[in-house]
Length: 158
Image (cartoon, rainbow, N blue to C red; front, side, top):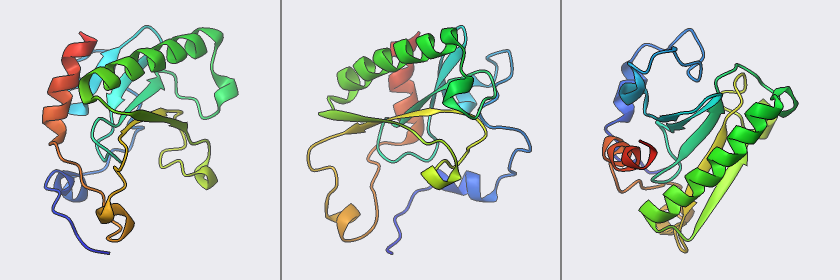
């Protein structure tokens, strides 16, 4: 596999790894910019993926630390679905994407990198975005720096 320069990843590689769940947020929003939290709702929140599959890759998570879909309360399920709908509109408006993958990986066998805390992925897609880099080079390119994407999306959630 060829390598692609991604300078923001060095912070993860060299940085200390948290002992606690990365999706369990502190009650105040003091760290929201650093953690790339876009929006806090009553029972759920929207956060950017620090290691995105595509530009604008965001996630919707319940505050409550649950692993299974059937552990969500009715309020959590309803708010998360409404938030997914809102996020879909925001991603389409900002990125002019032609499609969006919305996914949920339950369990390690299903591909959940962080299986202990349920989270829904929203990944903007464009016709042809699986270019030669992804198909032949087994490499994805992210054309915009993560902080720039965060600042651009944040205004839609305020």
